[in-house]
Image (cartoon, rainbow, N blue to C red; front, top):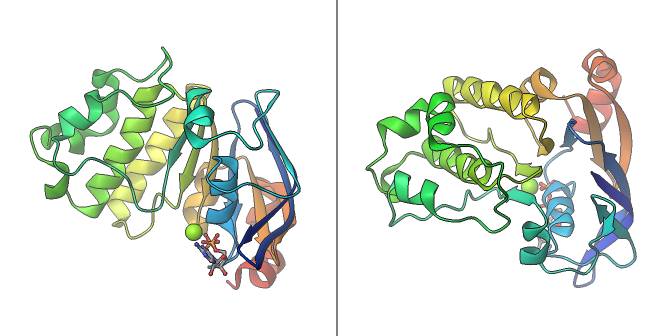
Length: 231
Ligand SMILES: Nc1ncnc2c1ncn2[C@@H]1O[C@H](COP(=O)(O)OP(=O)(O)O)[C@@H](O)[C@H]1O
Ligand SMILES: [Mg+2]
């Protein structure tokens, strides 16, 4: 589904990703972990085409996408929920959910299915985006991407700043996303959440992937958690 081969990404003269490689098979839910500033968001932005790696190559569904523009990549079926949860604040929840999303395939979730899993959004259906709490905005941003029918989701810290009950809701949604066969690359700081939902983990450290293993192995590996994540 996604193959990243030895990407190097800079901001001006700052050398951030120093040879990152990873791959996701169809249907997998894989995390990208790492401390603050490790380059997780930079990796997501490079995959989505907001930053161009030099050198490095990215393949999505077998096609090289390196150098394509973000909207072209989105149109191929890659959905992205950024850290800052982009929704339309002057539109209602329902309007947000009914707006076409770039990349819209035919397999997007129906409104019924969205409300089944995001009951909080159904309760707020006539509220404007600006009237929602941070957690509700996050739900709406995820729901919008699920409406699009994207095959690969890139989620940048979806649980950040959320109350525990909302994290549990997102956990349930992740499991449902997995069931429906979508592939997910999840950037996370919440290790408990990450190990509840993921099949495998990659850890970014020093601009490279310092560790990649199954969820089973990672869960019990306290040394790796201490060394690369500081926990
Ligand atoms: N727009 C930018 N310009 C310059 N440096 C940046 C920019 N965005 C991030 N960085 C730097 O790149 C490094 C990785 O940032 P980021 O990918 O956001 O880390 P993470 O998401 O893992 O917390 C950090 O040192 C950060 O300061
Ligand atoms: Mg980040």
